[in-house]
Image 1 (tube, rainbow, N blue to C red):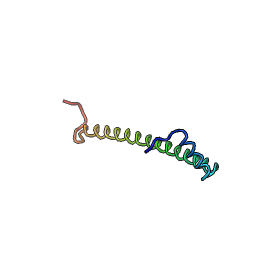
Image 2 (cartoon, one colour; image 1 turned 180 degrees about the vertical axis):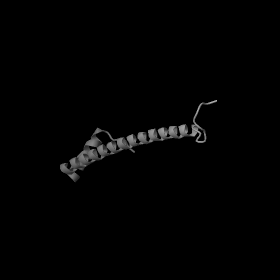
Image 3 (cartoon, helix red, strand yellow; image 1 turned 120 degrees about the vertical axis):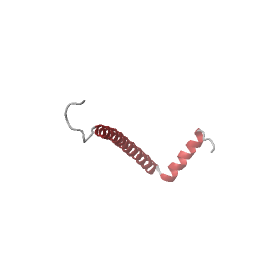
Image 4 (cartoon, rainbow, N blue to C red; image 1 turned 30 degrees about the vertical axis):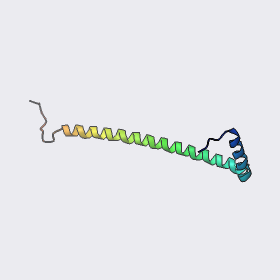
Length: 80
């Protein structure tokens, strides 16, 4: 892909402004910003849920491990 210099970007901006008009271009920018914000929020929520789920799995493994150490057939009393 060819490298675009400063003047090429100016020409592209002028062509886009002529084709779409100022209001549509600003609407595109507004919608793009809104989409990016929503994506960031959802990714942060997903990250928090993943961390909570991982911590829950670790805690659950600890509980299972502790339960495995307890012998249900063992009678309470002093150990020999």
